[in-house]
Amino acid sequence: MKNYFKNKMRDRLTYCHEWKNSVDIYLANQEITKKADEEYYKSKPLLKLILNIYFIPYNILRFFLYLRMIHEYKKNQVEIKILNREIGEK
Image 1 (spheres, rainbow, N blue to C red):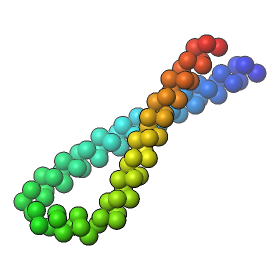
Image 2: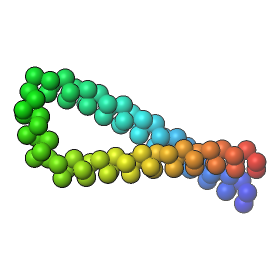
Image 3: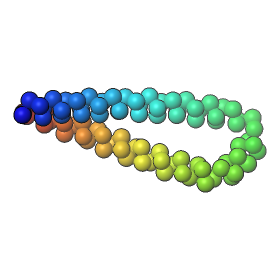
Image 4: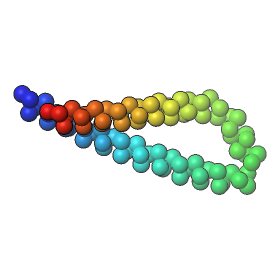
């Protein structure tokens, strides 16, 4: 029974690492997209202002979703530490 539980903990640790890697890739791509947008709208400041005003509700929602993802990312890092410690003790 202990072996089964330990294997399940290892599976969960593997899943946590994979999820962390996926989020790292997503955040890196978001940064690239943000830089591309900044570069594109340098020559079109009025269009950027109009679009930012028009999409305020959507941008606020995206910001809160981003904050939630960062919260889950930090929580996942703590979970990885705890799983490593638990697997190491057993």
